[in-house]
Amino acid sequence: MASAAGGYLRLHLRDRRHVRFKGAIDIVTEADLAAEKLIVDKIRSLYPGHDILAEESPATSLGSPFRWIVDPLDGTTNYSHGYPVFCVSIALEIQGVCVLGVVYDPMREEMFTAVKGQGAFLNGEPITVSRTEEISRSLLATGFPYDIRSSSENNMNYFWVMAMNAQAIRRAGSAALDLAYVAAGRFDGFWELKLKPWDMAAGCLLVSEAGGRVTDLRGGDFVLDAPHVMASNGAIHARMLGLLAAAPRAVG
Image 1 (tube, one colour):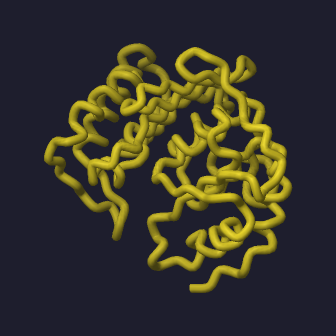
Image 2 (cartoon, helix red, strand yellow; image 1 turned 120 degrees about the vertical axis):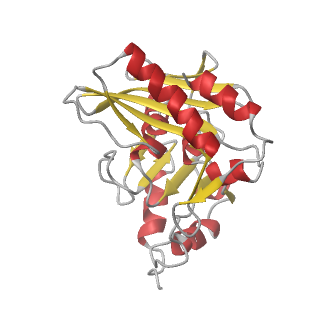
């Protein structure tokens, strides 16, 4: 499912795409809708009794213990500009526990996968988080919410304090890929505000199965419905939490 949807996205990256705005800067493209239909139709054909939570479609509530969580195109803004940093993210929950996660980057043909209790993999090879122990030597990743122009809770204060302490920060525009990169040891840590379950489900399982740590921004247990998330290699997690706690108060 992920590879088929990713192949569609890659094929149509340079097409002229209709873009619809869901908010001031929150958009959906024809590619989002087509890729999601491809995934959802496949799930329904294979598992007609399963529930589905997908970004662009109404959620189903059949009462099934199985729920698929789908982001057909994470990095829509990138995609709409022809910037080739985006992915497909698919996760499966059983009775509220995420047991399967897939993040597929079609431009690099990188398939990140994880099964609960069985580790994390990139194109079939095991991956682990980094061993970086100092925040000053850490490469971090983050993103900014769609209401950055209107809300004081916009991550700017957290970005400032992290930028003053980390080696560097990247803002690539795909939370699912950022989490996959933490799992693969490419990033040492990641945090973001106001995400949705489809942004995080697969990626957070990848990090956990790769030996990392995932919490909320205060160090509490991570739950999928929480809009804030922090993921790291574990070694720098406490320091990241401390920096966020000491960040200037958001003003807006």
